[in-house]
Image 1 (cartoon, rainbow, N blue to C red):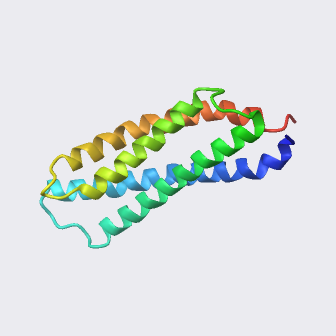
Image 2: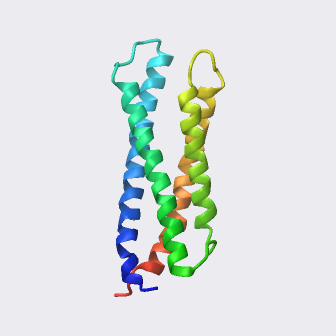
Length: 147
């Protein structure tokens, strides 16, 4: 397959990854703010939780978009999957994001297990994003035209 025809796909992936990491950073900030307010038994701003939920939805959407781009691009370029550690790392990140979303939506006084699961999943997600970045860099080098 002609590589330049896939260049637009990799640009979308690069921007999506950047926005995913930015959303993750903002989620850490807003989540830490909510946690600090809860620990200090102080009220949090009314807008904070909805912003956190919107950011989480955006990040989850971008991560799923990235998975789709990776699968389509790899199948289009190689004809099959599994050429590097990037696939299992990416699938692990998708799974962690889905666990985070699911547990985050369950947080309530009636479900005391949800908050620790949500927080610990997001801590592990940091390592997942780091692994995807490192393994993805070698993938990007394969697709970029040699200058």
